[in-house]
Length: 117
Image (cartoon, rainbow, N blue to C red):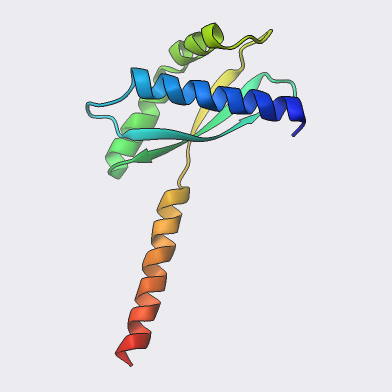
């Protein structure tokens, strides 16, 4: 990525994170954190990766809610950033923490078997 796309991605990450925490926190939705934003070189599309804490059902429901409200989020984003075009938003679940937890459990299981011998 170029320096400009990286800066725009950083600003979008901060602003969308703020919008999500302010507008969509609490209730039946899981705790959400924007972990990464990737912007296309023409700044027309922003892929937003969100880490969601909770059960799989809560994660699915939260991601579906973000998808259904992306036009509203895009409107709020447009009022907070100064770009010629506000990029289209695409939300993705970031499952990095789930994979880290699975790897930690495997490592604990392996070390547990070593201690048992």
